[in-house]
Length: 223
Image 1 (cartoon, rainbow, N blue to C red):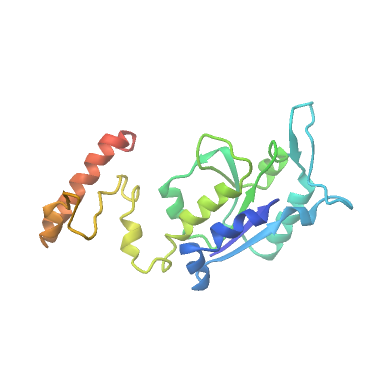
Image 2 (cartoon, one colour):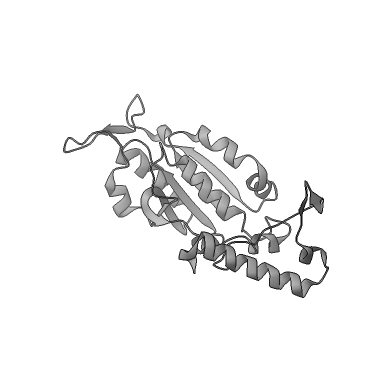
């Protein structure tokens, strides 16, 4: 999988993309991630990338020319499964969408700033708009990092124990059951006996019951 991220502040992507599972995925050669600075395609001597909004609305708007130039350059080099814009009014990011995207070959992610991007980009070049929640961030970079992390971890081969990712919350429409590790008792708090029994049938049944109970209590909207 190749991921191209278009940003005004590429340095914001360095830490999220340079550690943990995302870094290991790149080291394994399973994922390639490239961050492109939109300012490199800015207009004029000063590489202008924003301007005032028509109609007198407050706030600056990212200009169409730099974004268009960069997108068209990348499109000329390969075919993209989706060109995504991270925006609060997009489709809510959820695990089924993440799972589908893990099968992509090439994906482009555009990060907005200021009041937003010239809407003609959204009308004519963007193929999917994604939101990570009903709130506004200073820019799309953190949202893009969330999307990339969620997708990369379910790319086949990225996590050594693939069953671990498949038993995460939301994979089967339920929250995950509780998990425990050593010691068996701490401060008088014991690990449930069933998990120490060695009876995999009973353990599986307990995990299913716990997943359903937690979902009914914490996220009944999922049922």
